Structure formats: structure tokens, C-alpha cells
Image (cartoon, rainbow over all chains, first blue to last red; front, top):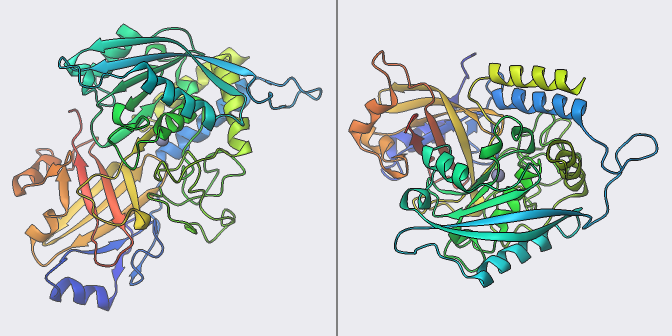
Length: 305
Length: 133
Ligand SMILES: [Zn+2]
């Protein structure tokens, strides 16, 4: 890897030496925030991007395997009508031995309503077919990629590739949720599904992330969508043409944010209102048509939906 | 034909190692006090950590496919590590050695979430995450 040349301006050096608080100065590359420190010079590191490689490889596979959901006359893709693809949902509520994490049917139905509202303009509707409740202290605090996650999913998962299993628990590590991609199902079927923080559900305690959009976001992954900031400003990004490129995640609701201003992906403001960014629940409210089409094709190809 | 494509796909993915495209959603933790509208993050695998006196040079391959690097410097080492966390909890001077193996290289699979604030008076915060927890 070529070492990145970093330079710090005189002003920054002065602040480093003279100011007591905050005393930590920064020089950064990659320009995740072009405006973050106007005194620092930025340079992108020249190494390859492993997850870019992985995403590109998955895309090649997808192109080779893809189905044609709409069965267009020319063999091309035709979007399926809104609401025409019904997804069965198994909702697994995980509590601790003191019943923390318990959810009423009203709370689960409220979450399902948020999910269906978010996908109203897409082919997908979500049909709650079963709810389970399991008291398990280890699973209640389940972490990403842990033995507890493996045990929980092995014990509880229902259905096939097209069945959405949702696990609501008090997950750790500052995560609101995680999900598996459609292309992962074949190699790890038991791992398939979506895990969310219980308090991210509507009315939960995880403000500003408590309007239920974490499930919407994670189901987006489950249907094959990447983050809007996938790939940063370069390359193919999230493989969706109508979501402007974004250099890095946005938080809060930074109206007017424009983090990619140079090169072929410079057009458009950052898609901060998109469900696949990291902004507050109150800020995110939409999928693009391109995302709907990608989810349609991905779910048809890998999930048989 | 599809079977062949699928076989090649699985083989090639395995060659890419442990790096994965992330399918998560991050919340801003309480210890990050930056206005969220001015905040971003780098989450991923650390590829370089070098300490020189009271500064740390580090590089990260993010889970969303970018390579980033930065240098943090302070008037004292205590000021620098005051900007660190370990799995979300406050970082102590003794924690630094946990980031490295016996040969002094940073541990394979070492990850971090780096919080970057656009405000000039808010230095970055590095939340280190040790491998193989
Ligand atoms: Zn995500």
C-alpha cells in the first residue's frame, strides 16, 4: 500500500501545540468530509477495496443468474406491479428472563404497518404469518456474527429463501440492526434473516431511531439493496442508477449535503431521505425506482419471490 | 450454466477473505457529542496503526468499500487516547497493547468505528473493536 501523504496546515499545527482543549488535531484522507477541516489536505489511499471487489463479484453473479420477474417480450426486465409480491413474515420476539423486550401484538402490528407503508410503491407486501416469543438471556443481548446469533437462528428460523424471519432483541455494539443479502442464502440458509433492536420499533426508546425504519432499512438489505454510500464517490456505488453517489454515511438530517462533487458521480445531492442511508428515522422516507427494480430482480433471482 | 456460474462465484468469494459488504445500521452512540448533521463515520477493518510520540497514523478499509486514513495528534498521549473507546467503553493506556500481537503488528481482524465531526473543535473518536471476541 502506498503511504498516504498527509499534511497539516499551520493553523492546525498551532491548534495542536497551543490549544489545551480539545487538544487532538486531525489530518485525514479519503475526504469523507470535504468540509470537515478546511485546513487539512486530503488524499485518497491507493489500495484496492476488498468489499468493492466482493460487491463487483456478486454483481457479475447476479447478472449471470438473474431472472426476469416481469417476463418482458424482449427478455428484459419489466417491473412487477406494486403490491404483487407477498412475503411471509415470521416475527421472533426475544426477551430476557425478566420479560424485558416483550412486545404486544399491537406493537408488532404497528411495526408491520410501518414496513408495508415504506414499501407501498414497490412490488412487495409483508404478511405476518406467525409470531414467536423466546426468553433467553444470551439471545436477548445477541451480537453480530456470534455463537448466540447462530444458535438463535438455528432454533427459530422458519420457511425458505422467500420467507422473512425477523428477530427483535436488545442487540449490542451500537447497532440498530443487521441483515443478510439474498445472494448469501444459498451458502448460509440458516443465517438468513433480519435482526433489529427492539427499541427501534415504533414508540421504542431508541430515539431518534424509534419510528420503525430500522426494519425497513434491514429488509432493504434482505431484498438486495446496498447502502446509498456503498463505494463512496467512485465506481458503481450501490448499483442503482437513480441514487446519487454519497461519500460516507449521513446522520441526523443534513439537508443539502453534497459529499461527491467531482468526477463522473458528482451529480445530485446526497440521498439523505433514502431508507438506505444512516439518517434519523424522521428524515428517511423513500426508496428510489431503481432500488425498487433492483430489489425486485434480486429477490426473484435469489429468493424465488 | 447457472450452476457453473454459481460455483465460480462461491470459489472467488472465498478468495476475498473475511471482508464483507455490511448490511447493518449504526446508531450514533451517546459518547459522540457532535451535531449529527455534521457527523459521518468510517466503519471497517484497520489496515495500519502507527504511533509516533503523541500521534497515531491509521488506515481503514471501510465496510462500504472505501479506503481512508488519518493522523490524530495531541499535546500528550493521554489527550490522544482520550479520543479512543474500546468496544464502546472508555479506553485506558493499558488497552493500547491489546491492539497488537506479540510481534508488534496490529492484530489481524482489528476493526474500528471512527466518528468524524465537521465542526472544527470536535476531534475524531475511534471506537476500537478487537477481533475474535
Ligand atoms: Zn444497512
